[in-house]
Image (cartoon, rainbow, N blue to C red; front, side, top):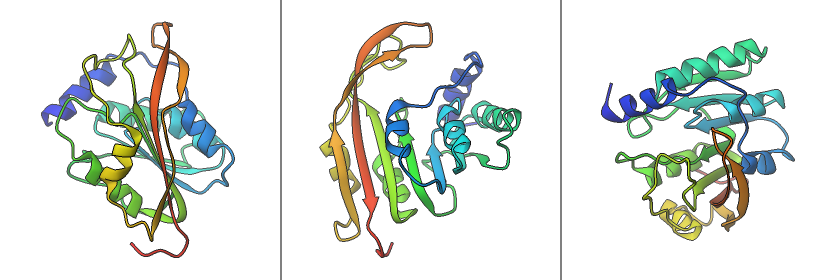
Length: 207
């Protein structure tokens, strides 16, 4: 495997399998939506994918780490959601899942390795169906338990501008930096800032 794949494979192998939690900004955004086809970029432990599937979404969950992908498949089967969750391994710097989606979620798509993030997110936006949403949630501050303690995270308006999307085809409907109380893997509690960008593909737009 590549160095990035080895890094994330080690990261996921070291994690204890437990009760996965959905990211709160995904819950806030997707809760009112009519279920359709969803794509979870960097699915990790699978909490978001499983949460969506339980609510009727058909989910494609992707990650660079084989352990993460297999765990999502296994957990989906365990919870009777195997028909609603497809898990695929992708290095998003090199490949992107096929299909068209009503919701694409990129939660904390940070890595210590080179990643053409704007290109990946632009590709994601182009995979939206008309009316579909791309939700990008980044770290805006460093939590005590984070693997990345020295990061500089671009502001939401920088992320949105970096996508360079055609304003006739896409609308940025949210770009802000909410704060929330978060709980780490060891039970630690801290107030963190998220950087949120929400993009809608407008009805009837081309690619």
